[in-house]
Length: 517
Image (cartoon, rainbow, N blue to C red; front, side, top):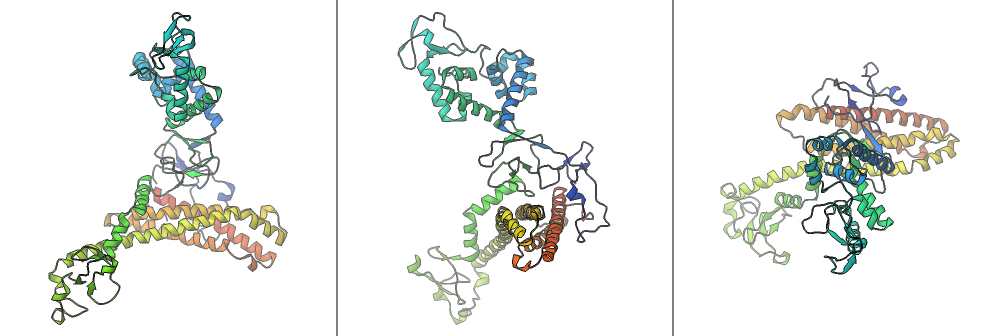
């Protein structure tokens, strides 16, 4: 078993203890029998489930960021929260790194953070004096001006316009610098609060909160639309997906809303797969595998008959040249002496044989890719169907309650089975990406065999559960048939959950422990 956690399909996941052993806290349903399909004689490991990630709401994240700022203020003796926030942002909100660097050289840390002094602003020497603003060139009273600790003073109107533009430009407003050329003094939170309107300051505060998450490698926003939760995970390179409080599962490493949870394939292979699926190079590969170029104008030509006499049709954009499909020589040099219309004894001595070998290799590679892509798409579409079934589970349950006069609890299995189908289909979908990049060399043969064995088991039982769930209600003509169907679906839902766990344990364990399965 690898040092990564095991797939749970739920909110909690499996993590390794310090001694390397894995623990899982079994729920009541997981502790029950899973039916005759499983070998009851096999003693299963008892492990304890431990949550290795944490879902945090936006309000909790705001409180946490303020608590961290207050802690740094107290520990380092920084006089105000705005300066402490600037220091923390420079060190990606990492308290330990900031404190260590600050203790070594506080001046260097402040300079790096754009904080020339720990004062919030530099007050004017003479508030009643009149000066000329170097931005708008208008005169202003010093009392109606503002200067950061760097001392560059401008009128309040120019400062307001400048900061409003920065906020409207987006998240970069939290790193805005003084308006003076080449000045590195950062515009801090209190300056925004003093100068801009409350509505704009609220927008700035949200950008500041986002930086607390975006700059922290251990915390990420849930990528699901309209969700404001965050997920904290101590293990940034974890293979196991995390699940937000909104129910959305996603890979913590790539956090892509379109992909979500792509286990068992890793992020690099997912990127390569998506690029391959969208790349025009696949069209080129098909052209190489299924067409040949006219020897004269190099236009691609697809053969649609048995005769070797080819014509590059002018009405299709060609040149009209007639040639032999096999050797690509001029047809005027062919006849009965070269083998006739269906053979060519010049082929073995021509350059065309080398081109055809390359074409055959390309066709083999394309067929290999299409084998995995077809199955990837099939499970992807099946997952969409399962998702629709989950959305309609309540409606189906209501119909069953009315037909057989049963309780709502008696139809809970519908939601559980569709959830299991979605989990299984998702893993099966990405398992074909994993398999495509697994390789087929001799060194990988044992891993490939175990992978295909576990995948076949999971696929077979998932398909059967899907068939069970989709059984027509017309066939459930009486109560006893409904109870029998319910027990069968419930039992097979658990069976599928076990086979899913076996598959993921095998893949994440390195596909090396074959006698365990």
